[in-house]
Image 1 (cartoon, helix red, strand yellow):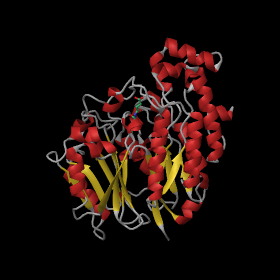
Image 2: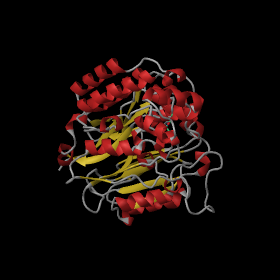
Image 3: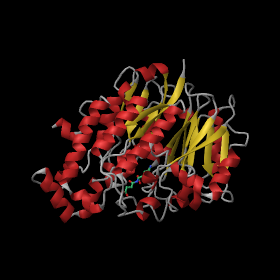
Image 4: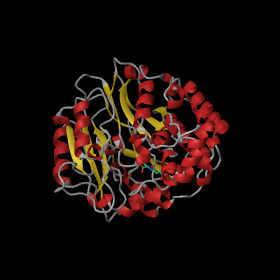
Length: 447
Ligand SMILES: NCCC[C@H](NC(=O)CCC(=O)O)C(=O)O
């Protein structure tokens, strides 16, 4: 049977803005208060999806969320009509208000952790939405994310959905941004590599000093249990706390893997050699495992954070070669583009580099890899997916028209307080659920 990896990219929502909400995420903080362009952002994302589709990849779309989140504002004591809730919150609690306006669900690498059927005890694909507890604006996502994933992967014979982990920093879970699956082929049992930032119940262990570690070991272990993974095929690695303090807020800012390739920075992990030996042992020797380590002397951590060299997608093309999907920031850096040009000449599976402009997302700290959720699947499992969410020429055209019809060209901080923006968003999302055949996934549709 044919197996492959599908990428489900987050469609940028109509309220895309720069609010400086993510301490520890350098780009988010440095672009705070800049004017954003939701229309351009959505189109940049759609172009990347179409480009991967045109490269012969299976590409899907993950719908954005309803914002501003007036339900959360009501829980926080604002009342009256939706317009009054928005106006009062914007005036009385501007910081809270900005957070409930974020379009952060676009970074679907944080939507959930996925284990494909070859790895799980019951032979189903398992989904656990990430609770994203560390950032208030992101902690609003998991319930609707779960609704959307269930509407995309409905078939219970093939897909198993779990509730997100308990909403507490002890079980802080950032999803697939901290999860990499290595395998000899997509349909073969793989090794699932879970990366965490800190130990929740042991303060004697290393932890960052300056910026938060969002994800805990205990969250990783819980997801591995829920998904029915075997210990012999799981590796837990701690992220180097020093790099978290340098702005590496997720592992996918410093490492990325695909099949038998792990591409990572020398400083990415604690106890790197021992853990990589464990990874090699669990991976086995039937297929060569390429551990491509980038040295400090080749690319510094600061340059990696600036260019998002590791927030690239490493994909397996239909011809068997691997390609790196990189943001144009990598091309603009003399050091990083020289490194990548040299890498494709080496004896590794990576043979192509493609650059795409996702600047609207990059300004909030989200590169190509942040924008996608990977699901390895078989042809049969693909048939069980809601076919309306899969990219093709028609859907690309329809979604571009939908963006043109509903999205604003620009959003500044003051625009967020316009109650009309909520109406525009709801109208857009209602239409989108019809295009993608999702049913009623949003609170405003559920009454
Ligand atoms: N995987 C990339 C995630 C980026 C995301 N940025 C944000 O939420 C920034 C939003 C803002 O500042 O407006 C985050 O930090 O979780």
